[in-house]
Length: 122
Image 1 (cartoon, rainbow, N blue to C red):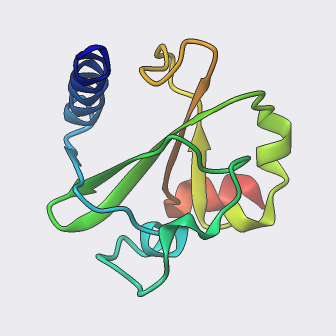
Image 2 (image 1 turned 45 degrees about the horizontal axis):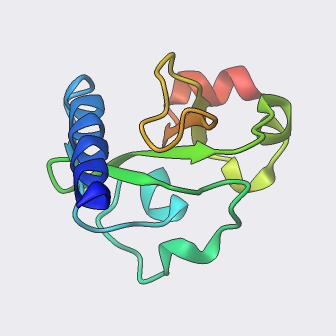
């Protein structure tokens, strides 16, 4: 019973997080490659990334297009993520929101890079 209540609280928080951005919580996971191109699916398993990048993740869509991934990371260092080549083409941000997965986690939001954000990273 405890786990069920915990799950419902997390799901509600995840839905509200997405709604603030105009996104819907996805029933399916997707890869960073799919996110980069705002696609639906690319045939790759979304779990192909290490837990230092994507852990306890929630996936969001804008219509049918991939819109964002909210990961809840332990011991997350923004500088480490900034240098990670796997994140080229992705905007990384740290929303000021308490992790709904675990208060000890840092919420990291991955979104498709816009032309403006790509120019800042050059």
